[in-house]
Length: 84
Image (cartoon, rainbow, N blue to C red):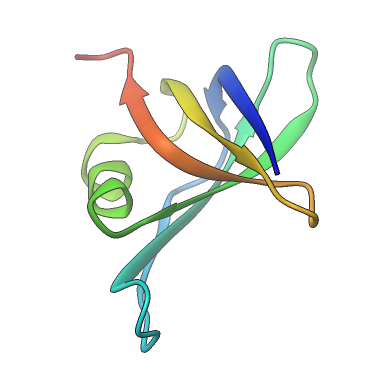
């Protein structure tokens, strides 16, 4: 996996789900539009999933630090909203 840091605009409502996995309790999934107009899928787990669901809304600017997986999705390690 590759490390990446992205800044973009949340383009869809954050989807929050509980999982039955032994590894994670919750997951948030949303799309982020980057300054070059490309759109990437972001997945955050557990505490960061809760943070994304509570803090991020459509149109918000977010900074994501994470890893790019083989499905070209970003697995978020840290997420920050520019509103704070």
